[in-house]
Length: 194
Image 1 (cartoon, rainbow, N blue to C red):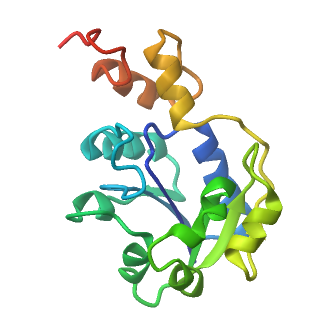
Image 2 (cartoon, rainbow, N blue to C red):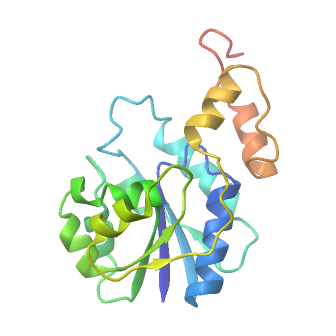
């Protein structure tokens, strides 16, 4: 059974890795696949980093963990990225889609959201500030809550912290931290060394 964690991964951070480990342990997954969105249609104007950077950071973040893998199928796909198309690309494979509670609460806004719920089992990672009742109403069917510590870390927070001159070290893996520094990602406008 495959657990899929999708997202912008801008950048992938320790809360993603903790959620992936919980999915592996608690769901009995054979593999946890981290799939960065190529062109996330719900964030077209949000200043998302280039897909190539997000893919490389995701690959770095999961390296060395035997039951983690990075998958670039959404990065390679042309046009907007939709979860249902990714799920369909796995054929009949048994899949659990791992979602943050905030994403799960918005499932009704997803393209073919009802089909996403039909195609994959759903596991939800609690997120600070997201009402569990909203999650249950959005999914409107069986799902699993993962037992994960509430880590109030988000890509938005990390990007803002970095742009303000703060450190994101230890909130991301060491390899991701080095990649961000080497490529001048998340620096204040005009501060990049290149």
